[in-house]
Image 1 (cartoon, one colour):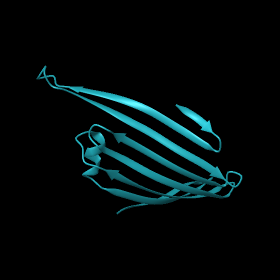
Image 2 (cartoon, rainbow, N blue to C red):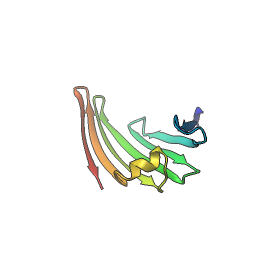
Image 3 (cartoon, rainbow, N blue to C red):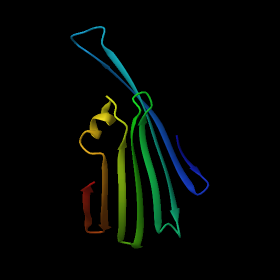
Length: 121
């Protein structure tokens, strides 16, 4: 689903993943991931706020990220974002949680390219 709802842009998707073993015919594992985002532009599209999330309801794990950007001029945009892994599961999302539990960052976009600074909390 990818729709405009008033001033908001809404996206949603379901991804089903199945694993099986080449050595054991009895081993299978299924994962259903729910993906969603919501964004809104303000003040003649100079400001953007976006929330994005991925969740695996069965493993009770997920990732959520928020982003805000400000278009200073036609060729210059400032961004800030932060994200966090939630829960501890055995799926792909849960495996990333062992690497880091939260992220933050900022960036500057211009016609000449993008400069990003990211940190780990």
